[in-house]
Image 1: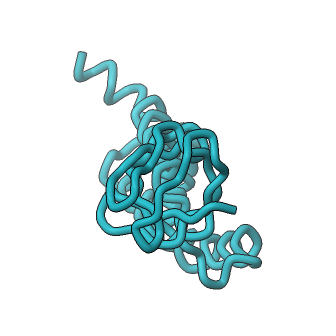
Image 2: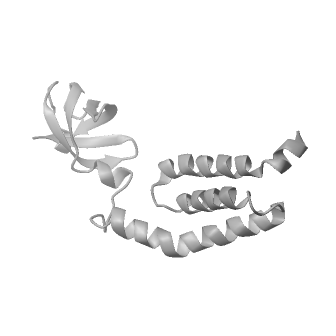
Length: 149
């Protein structure tokens, strides 16, 4: 089995490349993508370079070159309109949804935003009826504060 893998290292590098691409889907900052490109370059080079240590050096060099040259271009191209990209709680502020469980004055209800159900309270402890369109004005932990729109 080890002999098989040593004779077919291109499969190992291809697998590493695909795993890095899948991991890149979770981050979106094009960092892990550089390792994926390095792995694919090494998979191609493994047809011509027999030694595993040499292939590791090729992987490292290709990944570093990608980090310094490809990543800045990708960030500039894909995130050009997102100078202040919002994430996590900051991205929730201003989103609109629908009340699925009525929010009593001073209490909690549920709001559906993009298919996700959130525990919510009304702004200034106001009550909000079911099926009312609301906008998120604040978020504390997993509880959002909403106001009717």
